[in-house]
Image (cartoon, rainbow, N blue to C red):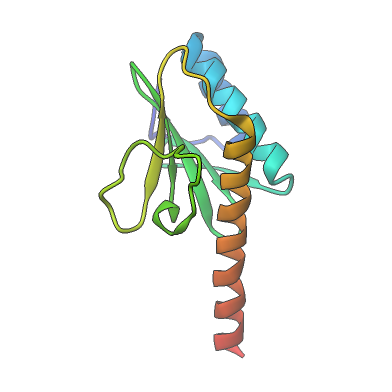
Length: 137
């Protein structure tokens, strides 16, 4: 699987579908399930393909979806600024900006809490967009 190669003009959603299918195991199932939850939380989310991985954006990057041998990692670009009352974030906790959710095989993720986290990320990005718009006027 080519993680950083050209997209050959294919839409990001097709590349994400391909990544999920190529994995062919619990990681593909998990990435697909988390992708669906992202779309439920933010129906107008934009799917992108950057750095050879899926990226979900809404007025800026919300999160990326990486897959490794033993985990699926969802990294929220501005995760350190998000409230996480249920403690979903379990990786990249020392940084000043990002936070991540590592999901191992058989691990269940609280769908409601995850959707809330995505909605909070959308709201945070919207605040930044409004501030940039005001400064440019």
